[in-house]
Image 1 (cartoon, one colour):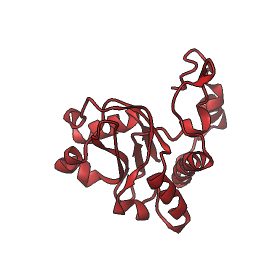
Image 2 (tube, helix red, strand yellow):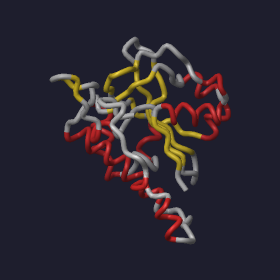
Image 3 (cartoon, one colour):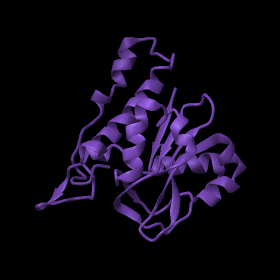
Image 4 (cartoon, one colour):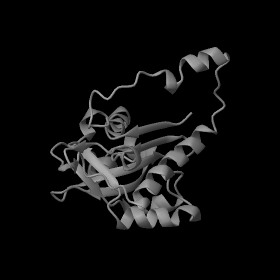
Amino acid sequence: FPVWGTCLGFEWMMEAVGGADVLTGGMDAENVSLPLNLTAAAATSKLLGGSDNAGLRENLSQKPLAMNNHKYGVTPETFYASDSLSNTFDVLSTSVDLSGMEFVSTAEAKGDALLFAVQWHPEKNQFENGMVGDAPYEAVNHSPEAVDASYAMARAFVNAARQSEHAFADPADRESRSFYKCAKTDATYPEFV
């Protein structure tokens, strides 16, 4: 089954594979939407690859569609210096924070493993619309291209999940674990996560 890590989940995945010292602090990437600097691996990746995603790759690389909200990250130098990371993941993109520091922004597992990691927040383009007075709570890009990028990430993950043969033996057990059984709250409003 696939595993997806967003932001802190990205950081946990990098630490789980590369060790606790792979994160660099002091990044200036809070409340900012950035473009992705795609690597050659992106065009043939499970997440962004294929001719159907050519427009997506163009938009992600030319427009600030990737909402970031982090102080820690993995620099390309640290990533490639780690045999564990570079033997496990392909870097699909990097981004540059507001102070000019480059960080790995999108990665996926090599081979058939279905591990996806994004340092940015694709879900916010569609779903975070919090307001503080008359102003948006965060600098989230809600353009059609940004929403399309969000949908493309979800579609890629769901398509990976469809490859899984895991299933609940008992439908009642499946139902008891359904997302719809989760408690809902707006306790952190206007913050989404």
